[in-house]
Length: 189
Image (cartoon, rainbow, N blue to C red; front, top):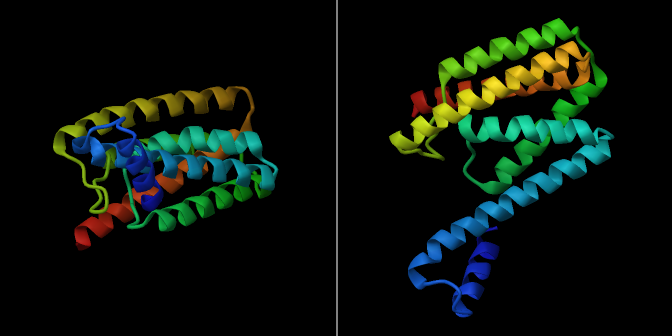
């Protein structure tokens, strides 16, 4: 991905569309765009293969903002993150497809995990360090996103959307685990 983003940046630099001093900014932007696009397209393909397209879209809508703002364990290379993310999505969808739990348990898991995530707060990981002022923004965005997810879970509960509610519970547990792992790794150095 880094080579592709460098080539794209070289191309627009050679065309005179950007200044040389802006090279790193554009290269980083292309890198983020490419990695995000590959991730989303892969998740959509996985969802179609598993036969759970809408559940996959729901997974992305809940998982991505919470993961982005809430921090957690970050791997060193894109391909490592990509593989683990795909495995997490496959496992989540297959768990929801194969099992069913009462909606009150799913709702309880979402609420308990939400509280736990808010107590832990965004976890600054050595592979993705964040400036203190940016961390305050992430804390606010995490709280807002968790609040929206809690509202969504209440709506899902009352409309008997047990599959989506269970999927949301699974996502929250995964996010809680990754944040705990990041805290452990940070303390171990």
